[in-house]
Image 1 (cartoon, rainbow, N blue to C red):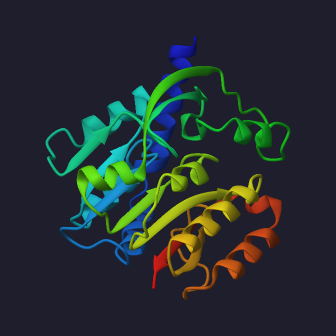
Image 2: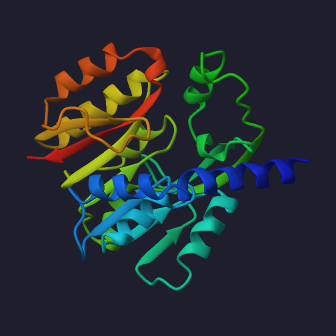
Length: 247
């Protein structure tokens, strides 16, 4: 039964993230602000590789991190003849080693290494019916280790369901541009991410809500202003991505 549920969940992800060309165009327009031909991009929490595909359409080389077998197989299939995409079956964290990863079989896009994320989702409005029904052990690396191995990326996308602050804790140098997902059930994680980036360098911030692929402010605001904006969002806003650019 779980095998069929996993297949349905994976097919749903493929349809949602690869089936909308208008969304692809909007995503490419947004990413083109940060990624140019010949650049390097890291896709941390790649899932089924829609962001990696966007980076490749823009001519960038991609290092994609995806620990789940099903989504990783999709990425491997999509880019099997593309030497400019490197797939790593691991997670990013604050240190190299091993993590316990909680899998949501029916909705694998919200699988996570964060127990705090599971606690925040439990009973939260909009998260009803989500079940993390499987645990796997996965290797972990750090952003510092990835930079040492592959070089400095022009852009890093981080989408790891409440584990974003742990990923940024594994970075000790400012990078040109990054994005990280946030949710309204864990605004504290977003605040820690913003504080971490502000400690690393002089960053300006903007955000895109949900899957709109559009920046809200159109200019780079301060860390404190971004934290205040996220604190003021209604719960129903649910999620989005914070973008940070080194000034």
